[in-house]
Length: 345
View (cartoon, rainbow, N blue to C red):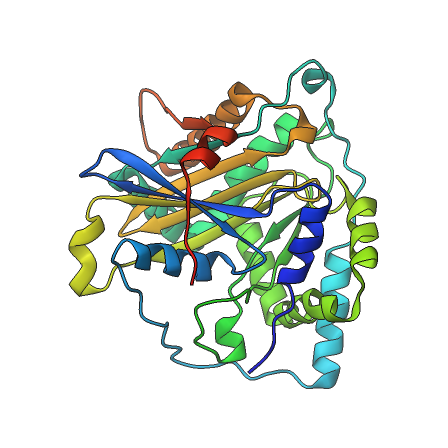
């Protein structure tokens, strides 16, 4: 089986003072409260973490059955994929908008929104009407509101990181560990769902995931100092942000009653190389959205909640959903950390 070394870079990131915990929330309607969980990205990716978290509340997810395993590219194909990944991940000198943020006090917090079932269904139907997946729709709306808020030139080039579960390509069913290949999505000017879907399809067709996988696993050959210097060099120049869509999950029939009518939310770590972090997770048709802003953006909770409101409003407007008021929730990160549980093997 292939060996994954990508968790090592998170350990180095932690040594630089960054928080490498993924955040998960499980909303139990019977309790009318959110149960928080933290899980180190050094140990597992999002898929591995949520399987363990669900098991801790009595929902046991079976390993995914791969109907087919894509053919692995040969040596030349992998080299070409690696070159493509490197070109697509080239750093950008972002024209960060600093005037409005300069006077604000950074307030680490976690913002989330639990989208009603019928509204999520309308958004996914709109995506189907456009001929794209929900990821492209959510990403286009997120990119619009973030570039307008945080870039002095909203039309400039920007790079988003989009993690991709690589287990199927590797032909493995293991549920633990880090098995993601992040794709760099480069956008410029206005972006729409069709353009994003087309670019991703083209990149996948060229095998960029294999290039990303090999690059990520170069960590085995690098010293901690080399990784640390690379992160220092790329602060606020690598990715504009990261958007992780965990897609739709369903409980096994035997456990379906244990979280009926509930939501699950998830978020990758936020860092200076990915200062805007957003996520979405759909559990039994109910989608939850998350947003974090790195302290270096000098954003308080109101700025984060406003950005989440704008993101959801953009999705609703595109999907034809009418709602009087969008009310995201916010919890201070110290409070979340104090309430959260950790799940181990």
